[in-house]
Length: 87
Image 1 (cartoon, helix red, strand yellow):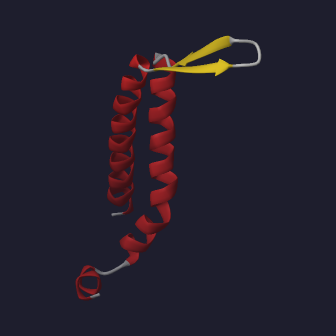
Image 2 (image 1 turned 90 degrees about the horizontal axis):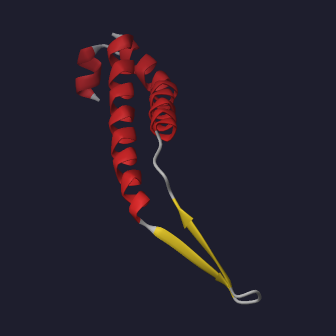
């Protein structure tokens, strides 16, 4: 029972990581420009999506789901189903 609750937490976290990676993908089309008026130079920042970024984001999402879902999963696994329905 505990494994199913942990699995649910990991799946939800991975779904959130996938949405975050998709949103971050669109940042590769955006350029941020900053002007230094003292030297009249321009600095342009851009985001480049690499496989390393994607893997890191998904791993951090899975670890967050595992760690963040552990205590609620333990509590839910110890609870009787009839008690969960009542309160």
